Length: 474
Image (cartoon, one colour):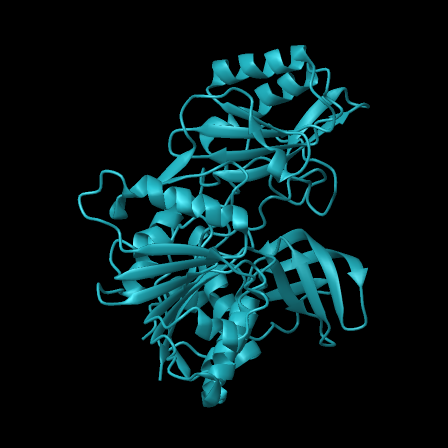
């Protein structure tokens, strides 16, 4: 049963390009995931149009030509889409110097979600011939001020005599001249201009290429990447700025493992999952979800779908800091978290110990281990033991080796011994293409059905598609 909204249905109603349009005008039939309108010329050639929306009639300037397609930029709208809205940020657009951090601010938020849902469905079907038995209602949240993690480039521009801090310009390596950012939390957006003044006044203004943002529930951390040792004057400037604006400075002279606090003490960077009574301390360079509002809902839905019981063992693959593992441990009988990074495994163990303290009800026995999950084999899978259910939350590369090992065990029963596969898998994905690839293995070679799938709008106004799928053993 589909839970599509009318907007989703209307947006994707099949249409044919109008005939008889004046020369040079194009009818936009649909939108791709990069927010480019798709039109066809009378001879059938495809035109991808930046800035155009479905069902609009437009004129466009071609900037790239190939044998069977062209890329163009919108120049005029002759008939406007009812889904077109005024962008919320002054730096968004097609103009020179426009910020490239967002792609879809000109499209109504609900229609953005509809596009992403269709991308998920299309990937599952066209890449894997998999169709979910039920479409989950999209998970949505605030469209603005949601981005609690960001990597901001820093550039001192000699010709202009200014420091720029922000995302790159659209289709450019230059840093956009951003004075505000609507997708950053308001208090961080308000820091952009003061930060520019701070860096401009530093001795190291030409050797600080990046500021990484990490917001917790109570702490705003800024990680300053610096290519040369900072002077005592610069350190004093950073301390004064931190005190004035309530931010916690971290310094990164080299790789991520060199990150350290400028001033020891103070509040700890962390976020809460209140539904489960879990608090997750983290360091600013640890992987955490960009959107904490959506993450809370995502974890809650994943656990409802997983439906772990006190009698069940659950494995959380690609467990990271324990974002899903520790909430699972509030309901399951036993939990195993597996992650590729030894450092993250150590952090997850620390978080487990932290959350055991003062709980009204104990967490299930929980173990964390490090394993190269991109080199999984059937033998390794059997060695990790049987589990009633799995949660899988891989990076963009997906979980191919894990899915392939599971498929091999299904195809070759002699490898299993007494081992049995999980009855249910909840797969959280940040790349619909690799989800589809793995879904194809699970459905066609490992004996599972895709019983549900849906999108998670973790990154409004961008082309990023986060999703969730459920696989049940047939």
